[in-house]
Image (cartoon, rainbow, N blue to C red; front, side, top):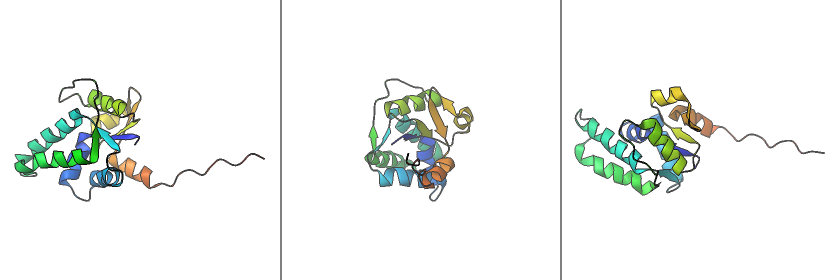
Length: 145
């Protein structure tokens, strides 16, 4: 896998079935179980964001732990070597990508998408990733005569 999924993608997939984030998660986790990597920081952000949604009734409080456990069944958790605060999205996701040996992070976080790239790690939206993944591979170069 050359990507890491941002916490917002997991959360949006959890609450919006059929959305672009849901389609990304289905493709990444469903077709390549255990190949996608994440960090404890990402999982902590997912849990915190889902807990925040319980106040508005968008997500049930008793379902948060189950949802995070479900995500863990489909990913490999890797150590990113650092402790990041809850607001340290760019450093946390760059560290996650580097720990997973990925070059890109799929996120719909507007601030990160505006940065495009941080410390060699590219931020790409779920819509852009879906479009890219649907494209056929480029043709092979012509054979030399």
